[in-house]
Length: 347
Image (cartoon, rainbow, N blue to C red; front, top):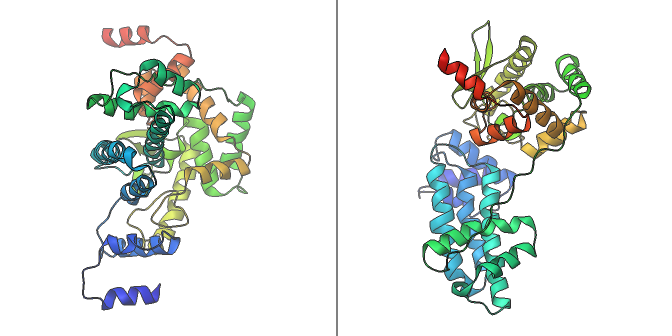
């Protein structure tokens, strides 16, 4: 790394992200990029977003040439265009990156199947499409994006890909297990502080790990009397014992942040091994499980308990989720909030 940085300093040409893009994507390369961004040598960018076009080009290069006339504009002018438009002011999540890749793969799978059966894309019928969907895994329904794009450009007829039904949650913790795990998070000093904090927030509020890992030190609101988290512009007040955990983790991260600033512009509350990136959601999930906390069951049980007492609109703000997701949870809790709305109007 010192030799590489020396080469950068000696070079007379303007150094850009493209120079690093041509190197292997290793932790060392990412760290060098992060240091240069933190030092304002390179402008900030969303690496996950910028990696998608390169991945798409490499994927398309392996596709049969006749398929590329459909897949190239679908990937670059539809999928990537929409992602860039919706992520101008917020970083791309790993789930969105995975979804885009899956949609392009499903489109290629369909075109390969049509080739095998001697069916031109423009002659694909609804029964044939449904036959392809039914003979494969559920993820084939993600071809819906490609069919929508193709139909909009008159490349296919009026075809419909049914949306995959959203399965109701089936994994829950008992009240006793939930209480025991929360007690350990609040009182067991043998547990790592980040495990105690993430566990308590999951057990009490059912926060998704992807949202939890987006928290920075700036999202902790502390006026010396009440500690709250800033979630999508809404304040989530914390109970005193949970507030103590969040304060302790914040203070711990503040100390390490003094060193991390050389390679990061974001003070993550749950930083990963690379300072510029938060902990991975899968890693946090496994870390909680390793310490006896059931992440999925705990989150589901917390969401169900909240949905029993809160209307969907309040639940959405409270847990930083979409209104449609919160509506489903209130449905699972079998509560009717029409009386609540009527009472609010009367007041």
